[in-house]
Structure formats: structure tokens, C-alpha cells
Length: 226
Length: 226
DNA sequence: CACCAAACTCAGCTAATTCTCAGCCAAATG
DNA sequence: CATTTGGCTGAGAATTAGCTGAGTTTGGTG
Image 1 (cartoon, rainbow over the protein chains, first blue to last red):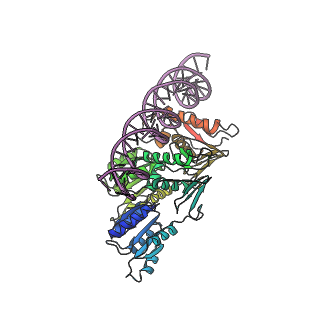
Image 2 (tube, each protein chain N blue to C red):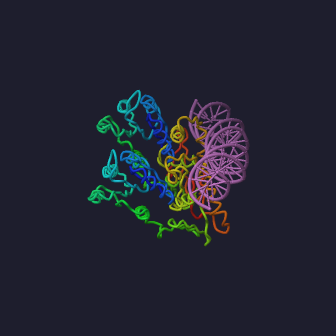
Image 3 (cartoon, rainbow over the protein chains, first blue to last red):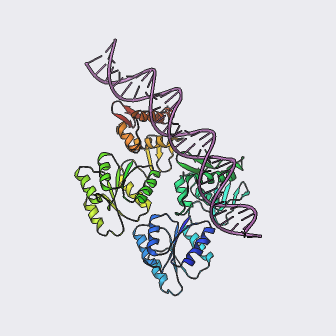
């Protein structure tokens, strides 16, 4: 899950980034409207958090322009407490949700989750495949009833793979979904993480069938092998 | 599918090349208008992605000159955000579509697909011929309901043949579509790969009819023999 | 500030794939 | 029917993709 935060107050921006990174999102920052628009238009985000008051190009304009460019990434608008009528403006400009400052971080999280909720395959926040279950909310991973401890990156990778069962995902797709765009990650790093996951998910359960498959030349795929 | 990218900003050019290669296109790069024109005129591309602002020869001129030379390869024009009236100029010069920077990669892909869309036989990302189906998105190949594992090159060859059913494709066409132009490939290599494909596609299914045909002196053709 | 876990890189290994080559066979030609 | 030409194929060399153990760097914690 990648999130773009467009917010000129560095203090707020970095605090949000920190919090969301902790929650396992890959976070990019933009500090003015133009920068935000450019990133939003060129990268692939799951959600954009967009402040209303921004230098160069204000939030409403950014929002309208993105929609005009046919970019439909969910947008969560933020506004400072003084800005009274902004709610209306924000929602009319094409934003999907609205949050007034100051807000509790958990409130932000809840809104993000609401915006990124996938209809398919998700019963609440759980994803499952054969006897493997992951809870994307509490980060609990279980196979055959036993808990599995994963690091943040391992979890993010597993979540991404599980969101696309029986689909081949290549290393570049994985890199651009799991890492933010400043990160310059070698394909080998993905191989290493797949190795870590395999050790914990597949090798540790020799009685269950393998779920992580390499498709040489194309990428990786999760699924129950026929 | 071969694509030529004419773009002087190396960063953008290589990023696009990377992305398109990932999508299974063979991509060539040119960094100025003259180089772009020369390649476009001498090689056989499915689409040309042409930046408007280029050193030596600008995009509009390249475009006009190509049309003058009777080269009708679809052209997708790119322009930077500042260039206001360029859309008009671009379309009048003979380009087929227009895309303003910055753009989402998926938008570019969609435009390319629109420009290369074949009316017949393509339902989404699937191609089929008799009881053979390939999914150019997930790389799943099936015949008579059974999965067939192909290597990357084998898949690319099969995809190319399936995109032109009942059409004779000669070895040079195949080479120039499947390999990029730096590669120096013998016609025999194509024969070898056709052999590999036949083994997996035709020989492995003796109860189905042969789909890959040699047309001696001319090339290869896929189709249901009458 | 020392420690530990996590994140990431690197080099070496293995195995699959890519590609070439040489010899063979079949079709076309005269 | 002899000869030439194009295409097929088994064998193997060269290349590349992916895996892994080991090591370095980073970042959080006591």
C-alpha cells in the first residue's frame, strides 16, 4: 500500500509519514500542490492525503486537475479548523473523504482503511489462502492454526502477494508497491525477501502444500498448486 | 510488439522503457529527433512514443516527415505541462494521440493499447485460437484445459503469432518483433523456438489439430488448417 | 551508547533458458 | 533423379535468473 501525503507543514507531514510507515504503508511526501500533483499523476498510490491550504497550487485545484486527468486514486482532504465551508468545496472538487484538523491519528487511519477497502476476498481485514490467514489489521499471520512472526517488510510483501492470488507479480511491480519511490531496490532484495517468507510460510509447514511459487522469467505467484 | 520511444530526458526514457518492457513490449530508445526519425523509418514498430521538445529535430517535424515518407506507424505525442497549444499542433502534424506530462504509466499503457488495438479476436488480455488460450496479462497458457509452461521467449513468440492468426510471418518479422534491434539473431534461432513451441503446443496434444504451420519459403502461420 | 533485529547488499552457486552449430531430411527445381 | 535450398533437430556452449549464506548498515530500545 502506497500513500502520498501532500502537506506543506513539514512537522505534520513527517509525523504522519512516521505513523503510517509504522502501520506498514509506503509513504511519499510532497510539500506543495504542484509537487503533489506531479507525484500523484506519475506514481501509483492507493490513497492521497491532500491538505487544502497549499503553496503554489491549492488542494482543491490539485484534486480537480487529477480527476480531469482521469486519475481516480482515492483522495482524503485535510483542512485546518478555521476553514469553514471547505468541506463542501472539498467534496465537490472530487475528493472522496474529508477530515478536519486537528484529528486523532487513529481517525486518519480509519478513513484510509475505509478508502482502501477492497470488496473482493476481504472478510473484514482478513485474507486467506488454503490454511494460511493474515489479518491486515492486527498483523497476525497464522498457518495451520500456528502463529507466524513476520517483520514489517515480510508482512507487506505477503499482504501484496495475498491480495493477488494466482496472479504473477514481477519484481518491479513488487518493488514499486512495497517500497517508496526514493528507495532504489535491487531485484535481488525481492528474491531475498521471498526467501525469508518461504522459510516461514512454506518450509516451516512441510505437511501443508507450498503456496509461494516462482515463475521463472515472469515473477512470483501465490496459490495452491494444481 | 515493438515500441520506439523518442525522448531526450534519459530518466523518463529509461523509466518508460523499463515499464513497457515489463509489459512485454520490445522497446527501442532514441534521444533526439533525427535518431528517432531514422529508427522509425528503418525499423518496424507497432507504436512510436514521441516527445514534442527534442534536440536536433522537434517532434512535430519528425512526425510530419514520417507521414511524408508514407510511414503510418501510430504516433503518441508527449508534451510537457507548460506547452499549451501543443495539443493542436501535435494532432495536426499527423500524430494519432496526445498525452500531457506528467502522466500515469497506466494511462500511457491504455493509450498504447488503444493505438494497437486489433478489432478481432481480442477480449481483454486473452487471445485464443481453437482450444488454445493465452492470457497476455497473467501469462497463463492453456490448451484443451491443460496448463502449458512456457519460457519468456517462447511466450513472446506465441503471443506474436497469436496476434496475427492466419497470417504468414517471416523470420525477419519475427526477429524484429521479439528481439530488440541490438540483438543479432540468426533465422535458425527462430526455427529452434518454433520447434520448442510445437513440442509444447502441438506435439503434446495429438488429439487436437496442429496450429503452428510452416509455409516453406515464406515463414510461419498459426491457424486451424482447412 | 551498546545491543539487537530488521533491512539490505553482495558474491558465489545452480539450474533454466537462450542461442549457435552441424548434420540431416524434405521439397523444389531443372 | 541429381542438386540445391529451406527447414528441422539434438547436442552443447554461453548467458542469465533466481537462491542463499554471510556480511554491512540502519534504526529502534533499554
